[in-house]
Image 1 (spheres, rainbow, N blue to C red):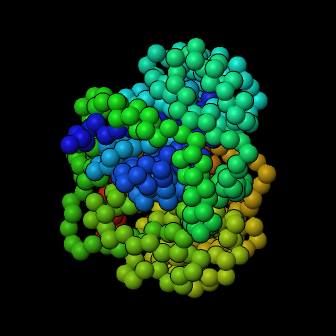
Image 2 (image 1 turned 180 degrees about the vertical axis):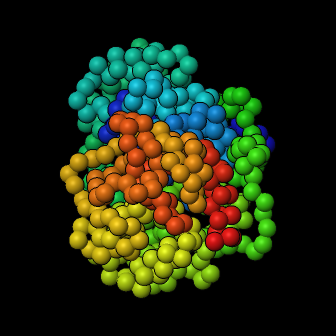
Image 3 (image 1 turned 90 degrees about the vertical axis):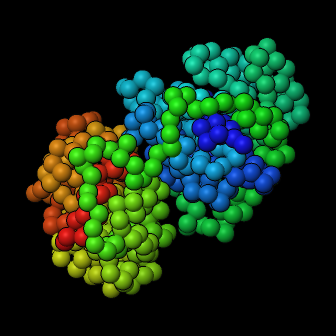
Length: 463
């Protein structure tokens, strides 16, 4: 029987974005699952959308591994938590293999995560415009960091049998085996828009077809036996890490523990097509803190879940569904009444927009005296943040790391009581704290600071 710390695993990486990582990773997940294996899907970095396709491919929750948001020390425990009971894990990388947080060296790169997991890397190379040069590219990536093991290459966008033969011949000198070749003549339709792929929740039937087409492409083009053997040779995860546990005191300071008492307060979590961005660990932390977590759809549900005492509204695409969200006036009023009552409300990015007076001219909940609108400018990057004052989510001085990813602007950008002070790229305050509301553009990963979930649930009990 495989030890929990020795789950077979692969990291799917590439020299750059756009090389085909998501296609290959999703296809491999589905192909291994079709072989009867329980496959654990993971994504390096803060991306919320790819894990939705991973979940569709495997039937298991897609989970993120972000060494910037959570710290390198939590990567192995979070991985083992997600992979518990699985036969094999596939980790999709982010950007290029060695690309990480700007100005932070290897931090949050796919290479760092591969090393922290002791996992072999499968390099997906876009071979559409090269032949012999592919050997120089692969040799460079394989030799750049001796701590990263490139276990094989999958050639993507190969033009013909002759092209494939030239690529394979060139790579023979590298000592890195070719584990697959996918033809460029067989496109797979996964539509994108302003922030990446269209989430599964918005196109579920079409997404099922897309994953099926991707899987067929990978099954026909890859040596699944060799890839599985590579994964099974990974050995134990370095460092003797134990799986992360939402209620474990070993991942939080004992002085931050919250006494659990009374009945379970209902915490409503926004979902549906407009609010698809969330980390699975958030709901697990809320439940471990004693909450009853209930999902609702702000587009379709006209009432909050019965007995709601707190509200979590994460990220997503409210700008795409502004008319539908606005048309659901009964729910907008219910959200506003809950917020005005002083109940805890945690809103991130899309949730921030939903709480504004209006979004692109469409009336929203009106909890915040601010307006939101779409722009052409992309705001993207990691942020170091500190809580400016006390809120239902964090005590003043709480330090967390976050990530911004949006093409909207909220005016004003901060309330009289801001949510966070942010150090970079410029020093500023942002977000809103009023009554029980904590609203901000920053996406945070609560596993890095489990006390925020316990504080939030405690406020739900007492508000």
